[in-house]
Image (tube, rainbow, N blue to C red):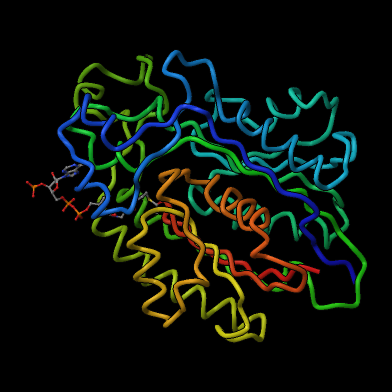
Length: 335
Ligand code: ACO
């Protein structure tokens, strides 16, 4: 039977490091407040001069992933691009990446599941592969968020959280009798809570449907009811973990590593406590990158593979909750 296998991963973050201390030049905040509440010490932002979009960061991550998978770009028969911060309003960043990779007519699909983008993307790729619609899929999560956040004190609850970056994975359908690859997944969405984490207006430039009053009110910046997101995330992440484990017929003890979305270190710690998980099984890197939304899981995965903590036969559980609300989890076993 065909199983969806990760053949190669890659990550790219821009070289510009922005520390918590750096943020104090724009807003009333402190290193202590940010570390205590979120665990974040620094994040990467693209150059303030602009002109760099998620498809550019995604291109760098994709090149590394393609190289490690030993694919050429022509081997890709579908691109899935997860982002909440597309380069332009339309067309999608997947099309821009396709062209930057030098591809001619390879299909490209953008998905808008925010922090849950990699989970939805992996599940979608698995469905394409199992149904025979594609066999080699490039899944990319990439964000440039730093150019669209409110750097004044008004926006400090959000501005301190987000970072820019990209992660990519080459996914291939492989015939194997082993219980490996994507073993189970669980996806959810609840539009009822769209307004607790959202960006209301489509662009930061004035256009006829966006009034000056709306812009003065900051409705072109992300909004977040942080406390509700926090509490909901801990509860739903624990629930969806149990759900996907049941589907895979596995227990918490069968999982070698949990790779959660990096929204807040405290969320991941509370989730781990609720399920009684040993700290070393939960992979966190938010301290160095902040919240890179759709890029956070593939970046953490790529680092874990590079550090060789993930090895042959490792069973990993990816999980995320983000705007939508959307949340989900995937159980994956390496060959
Ligand atoms: N620096 C200093 N003070 C700040 C900052 C800041 N960056 N941001 C807010 N404050 C102030 C507030 O104004 C408030 O002041 P007040 O008491 O005088 O009104 C005070 O700090 C407490 O603010 P709260 O919002 O209540 O702080 P809280 O302890 O809830 O922490 C946080 C805020 C970190 C955002 C938290 O709610 C959280 O982590 N929520 C989860 C949401 C999340 O992680 N989102 C990431 C994106 S979504 C996703 O990926 C799932």
